[in-house]
Image (cartoon, rainbow, N blue to C red; front, side, top):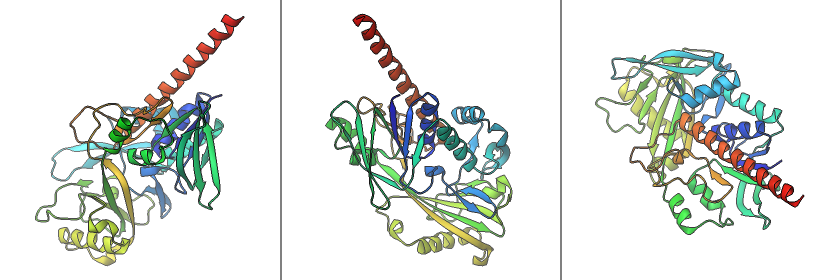
Length: 357
């Protein structure tokens, strides 16, 4: 049984883990955080789970909708009419009963049911070869305990730049390293607020008349579309895009919250600070890549794969978008390549045995 080391327990890492564990591979997943989900990570709010960053499902998300049917949770996916600010028509968007945590938990259940293992609070320090055709992933637990995983395949699901920083021990060409390092990213600062009331029934607002210089780029009124649920209040997200060189990036959570709230109240003057029951700020360093690469970089060397949202498309000038569907499609493709490579390897071994006999 070949072993696969998957770095990252976000959506792409969990999908890869689920597919390969079901295919009979020995799967080990290493996650730096204390919880799974990556950009789809959730927290408790009131009596329910809710995502730290806004999420929804589209009718056109073929890979994601197929995954929910495969896992048997399509009955938990409900569809709602969503009103976009400034648009006359409404769109149908989907959301899970119990939030996207229900999808994450099902993926984890399938992985563990098929013998896969997931380790949390693990920081990967180096990926190298063991000199015998296998890969060695060196990492450290939060309590400073060292740990190594020897594997036949590696799937890295973080940013391209982080992959380059931990892969100096791999026989990767300088040209490949440069191409991966040239992929730059925008960061995200997202303020999630639990409020007594929402000032708008629009699900998503991208334009702010009279206030063009707001620190956030969009407002996502979660509860305006998906109802109150059991959060104990109504939920809205203020999502900003920035560079880590921006002064706002290094400010404290409290200062950023006050800056966001100041701009929000200029748009909706009737909102009072007392209308906010609770809030939580989330920063994402590598949120969305600024451009697509010129070529396919998902397999920088044989047996090592980078399943990153930045690599879902190449040879295009279209502005990249970090969407779950394209990441799932890439994870499916990488798993297919690994299983086909493993099948071809076993067939060659069988041919050698037959020839020897």
